[in-house]
Length: 272
Length: 220
Image (cartoon, rainbow over all chains, first blue to last red; front, top):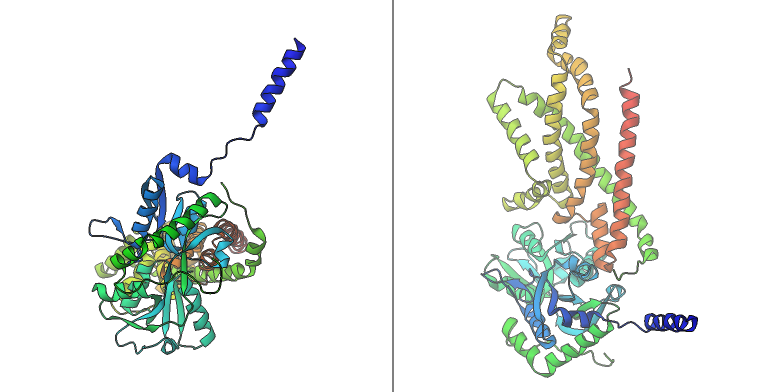
């Protein structure tokens, strides 16, 4: 009797100590049937809303492709730029398809895929502001979206120029930057060439002109997921690779950005 | 939640955040000082015989009390910007909060004015005080005694309202500094937790300070 009890207890103990099945984020997404993408929707042509208020853009299509590859339904979680990572960390979204620059500082908090897009920065200004190049920004009032790649570089240069008339104002959304520029609160901003061209050609903002390239290095952006979700990050890397391999990247580029050559996403002379 | 707190780099930003706290306090104090001055004026205007003055005061108080502070600050920056008046971010925030403070305090002061019996003014006048002297020496001291605690509340509210400046590009106050650190590093929880504690401490210190001042000034 006592022996049988001992065996039973031992058996239960063994069953409990057996390694528990570990479901990671990738499993959770597939099981739930929904992929929740954090997207920025005031950043055309990467993300915006159409006349029916439906999300559209390069990032939205990329999210759709990723969901299709996973065999699940896409769901868009709109986040302003500063809220992208908090949305992931707090579990409101599974991945960020939100043009996120892959800085080392941010990589301490979240995980990046290999670059899925690359931006060049240009000066966006208004007619009559007397700005035709990056150097001529000195002594002008500038603004940009708080915390973005270009905002950090621009603020650094404004500080470096130390011109009493020059200033830098960080705004919370791209829409506020355009509003400030159109009203004359600021004379110029530095944005990605894609956004600058979209804004200058949209007709929504009178007098917006592109005022030359900004001398920054190329801004590579990655898909983002929680730092410890290796399974998902690994999947994202392969997904980006397949988008380019299959020509889908070039197709989306032609659809949303332009007929020129899409930017090269590899960095010569280094792995990954 | 799967989140490991990085407190060491967060605490390294503490001096920056304390400097931001000072700016927050500065904006709140300025907005209160100007707000109180305007509020006294508005409170007197509501009792005026001129329907114009009454109308201006009533409009100010109604709009300030019945629209969100965020909206008032946004209007001070982008609204005025639309008609070509460019306040910088700091001034727009100060103007927005001052507008709000003046509206709320005017109502408080109107109540406080009623607490001072009219007979005292008449007594003062019959003793030879002029109308201004009677108001300044008889009514105002009693008014401030009556409204001091509601004023303290508004001061705390003003401190908390400064956090809205971030929508018009204020980057030097506590919320501005915190948000800047947040977007650069995305250690949201650490920085916001520190900011919350700092706001709490500022509000507490101000409340305690006000209590000390009240004890000093309004003792019988």
